Amino acid sequence: MRRRFALLTVAFQAIVQHPLRSLLSTLGLVIGVAALVAILSLIDGMEQFAREQIESSTDLQSITATPRTTDQIDGVTIRRDSFPTPTLLDARALDAELGGTATVTLTQRRGVEVGRDTMQSAAALMAAEATIWANAPVELKAGRFFSAAEEAEERRVVVVSASLAERFADSAEAAVGRILLIDGDEAEVVGVVDSEAAGPASVAGPYAAFAEPPEERAPTLMIHVNQAEMVPIVAEQVRGWLDGRFGGGQNGFAVNLYEDYAVQLRQGILLFKLIMGFITGISV
Image (cartoon, rainbow, N blue to C red; front, top):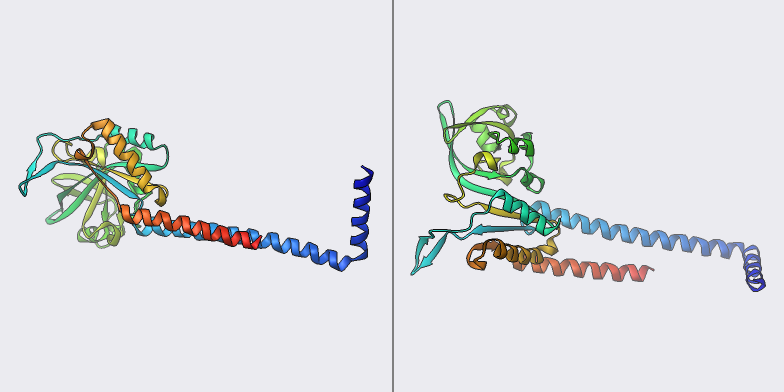
């Protein structure tokens, strides 16, 4: 105890006798800590910016699982008598299986006729769950996206591309609230999205209201992975789950992703973290 007190006394005397040196030492410590915090903040900001750009401008975080409905026999496409047909319950089960690492949405696509009064147009219809909007790289020009409540009520509400909306109204804003005929049945326009991302003539509506029977048109499971470097790992989880749920393995579903790009991206992010860690170590 006495030794510690003596050491503290010596240290205090040194501080008093050499105030400038003490001030510079303290200032150096403060600057060092501030530099370390700044570098760590810069690293986090750069990584977050890169992830946002990847998510908003690419499909690298997307995986699709589509039932195989045909076979190639001697160069001829033959439709299968039976194939797996995922449902909304299957989508929720897969979502739970992935445990928060990804979001699963059930979709179905087909061509439709869209009309109002005497005007007619062809469009690509996507029937989807409301969860698709959370990760869709589209920008609203007017109105809103359809909601989970409207999906549960099977309401016939749609979000249309700007180019399609402007065929039936003077502007995107004027199209909101209009009633269109989609394959002869009425649907209300609740939102208009940018055509560049959505496509030149496209319509999206709640899955429960617009999907055809899965036996007639197979639905697709769309999986959006939260972190791009996790895509290959999640894809393997999806393949294993599909095989256990439906059987048939690779022959039952086509699981598609940008696998080569995803692997390269994962390696790039790892290299970035190593370099930034090295810089941080030097700064310390």
